[in-house]
Image 1: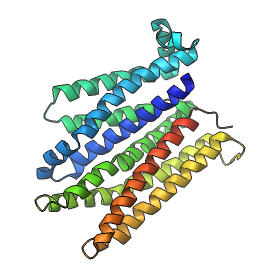
Image 2: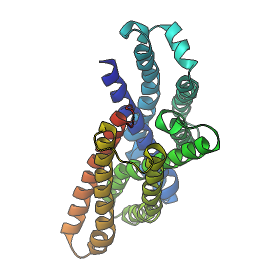
Image 3: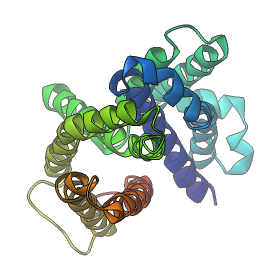
Image 4: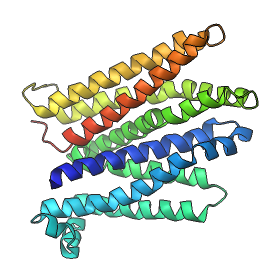
Length: 290
């Protein structure tokens, strides 16, 4: 039961961080200045929920790890076992993850003028920290540093891409309103333009990450490899959808209403696939590669 809870919490934590990163990038960097307050309000439920889920899941992950490291549920709430976990490599990284989660909630409650920018930085920092645990931390020295750097790029670019899909759908919805049509289209075009970089970074860093973990071998009898290949298929379909949307449907928006409807439907499919990818990673990243 605890391992299943741990996987579920990993899924929630990764998803919340990516949603927070994608939302804040859209609101603070991609939206035109006059459109920013409007988009922030429309997405308020999304990024506020992500902030709380990030912090709570980080704390609960520590408890779940303590339970698995100890003797079960009783040790999951045992402060002495928590301290033992915090003394491990995982714990030393996770302590900062929890602290940043608490700081993120504090920033949300204080509501500074630069709220979105600060949330963006904090979400990015927490995603970067995640590169310090798991298989990305399997190597030491210079090569280990490169592996963690590559994984950090992978997480950030994935958060930028997948986390930006719901704001993209919100912009599509707001583009129907004459008052915000121009600004919403500008935000969407910026997401599309710079999203190419995110997709390329996801693919390149993903290949490098797999090579650094598995080498050139691909043991198909390994559950890790099977789930990894499933992830690859999901991501490949997402790339195809993104390219089809951008280069086939978008040029037809003004000529065919059906193109807009299909764009929205396929983007929702992309959202579902991104959730499936995060779930798959949350599962197989807890397994040994061989």
